Length: 352
Image 1 (cartoon, rainbow, N blue to C red):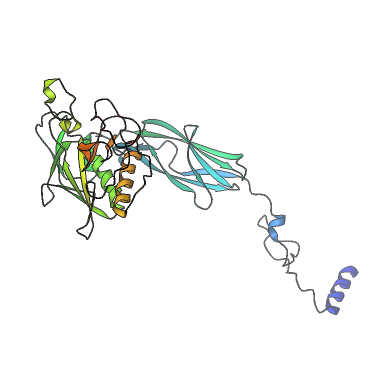
Image 2 (image 1 turned 90 degrees about the horizontal axis):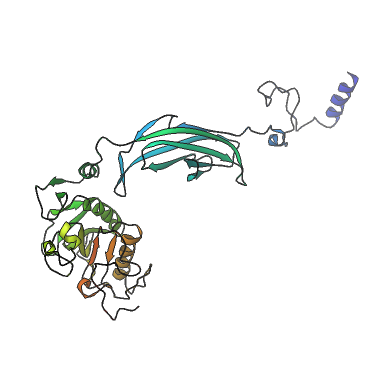
């Protein structure tokens, strides 16, 4: 008792013991502190370490999710993954034990993932320290299910296209007529002054949606084309003769892109007037000599690299393609590298 009085007296002589608080602050375990804490102390120094925790908030374990979203001409289940985490530097989301979906850092702990295959899918949230070592994990299983109708026709509806089936079109497996405004872009034939409906195989229509989305980023709102359906062989001839290779135009699975119209303007980027021929074996990015040339070549590269179409022939290819991009759904790429059997032969004078 005398020791405590001595301390109080000393404090009085020194004009008080500033820098202390009374012992009524909550303690780290939620009770009342039994000792005063200097104001300039760092409570984190004495804080107990946080127990690592990671847990899925959504989706629920066992959730059934239908593939009802269109991505790259496929029906997928688009799933938002939400996790709660404490005491970790970051969280790695993994599908089926090996496919990394995303890396999340607090406080942003949600990401979207797309699943195209039906069946049970194991999802793992791996909480890790700054060095990447796993501290804790949580796992759930979800069930991916097919939509009630995953036909091409259902896909056109899901994409918001205006279309109707055609009773018959020679050579075309699934003929449809699509109205000319697709994802905000108008499509018109170079021989017409106004957009007109287009006949095509159903599988071509979703590719035109992706084409529209691509060119819209360049301020383009019109595609001027040279045609889709033409029942002929490559270079001419009758596909029924059996003596020539049918063009993809004969199946209505190709479109020839002549020019692109700029929004709020009469200006166009023309493959015939603005594309500067360089060489046969193109590499991306291609050297350009003007703004229209740059845009045209970037579009061509994207059509190939993003696999919007399987075949991309530019004016570099040969004389028959000097005024358009021929794009179609044939397996294999003609844009980079050597040719594919059955496609128009190259001509000399275009480089190696």
